[in-house]
Image 1: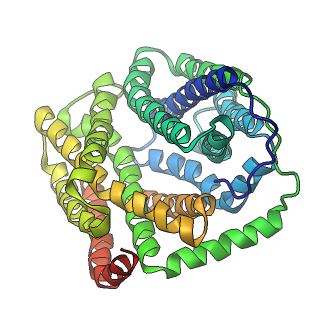
Image 2 (image 1 turned 180 degrees about the horizontal axis):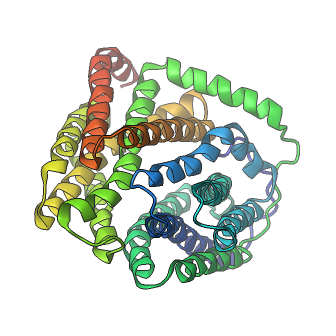
Length: 415
């Protein structure tokens, strides 16, 4: 979320930059791994504490909240100070969240929410700096492109291993030891960040001014047909993904007969991420950017699969459905995301576009999680809540389908 170009000293030797980039990749992997594992640790604590299945939604809502509250400020914060130090600050706050988890009485859900809220604050601080530092550590556009690709690759790998491998750790050891593993990962990630050069930021940045510019940028992006279409599309996708992750964690043991905490639950959940990777790979072959709005078709297929999913009671079929849901979601979101970044760069700048996108997505994830919690809390089954989420996604897709007529002329005009 870069909003200002940092004042850069003479470029460090290439070997130094390579060492710094490698340290960045490692710190990103470890931090993202622990992010995903920490949710499973808390889910295990909720189960052991006898909390209801929908309680995990409350905890995830606490994680989304900092993204909404701090959205106008974290980009300027990352640009005002050396980004390597901002990364350290983000990891330190995440580590604090896990340390709190070790110190508090985990029988109270409010305390668990506070812990995950703290991890969320660290995550929202960390996020813009990990992307914003790349131009400072690379010399050409080609190097920057490769560095961005590697950051994404390490993030995806961390999600898969964090859910699968992290889930295995959580299933094998008591919660206190799983929490210590998370804390160790954040601490090592923080230590690796010390190997990244301290490049000065722009001390002239003022938060009040930047916050005003942020909201003006949000207004411009939502008034433009193409960027508004993409913001709603990506927001709807991540809302559904966040709710389904929470719901499926509770649904798998009940529907497929696994015990609570069984490692196969987290491994099954990871198949959705594998599907998204496959979908992201297929997206350029199935949807052209000049007709990016056609990706809505794949969103409809995803919604139908979500609506059918609760009626499955066979592990093999469930795996196939989770892969298919992820794959359709990947094909749906990649063109939307690409067009949003391209058009957003022209309308509001890359950094503010990412910031507005984060705000939109996390607001919808918070709303979706709240609706899921309310539905189950007032008597709906987990399967019913999944169907409700599928129906909500379908409504967003119908809205997007009705907006295609306004988007097409804009796309033709730009091409």
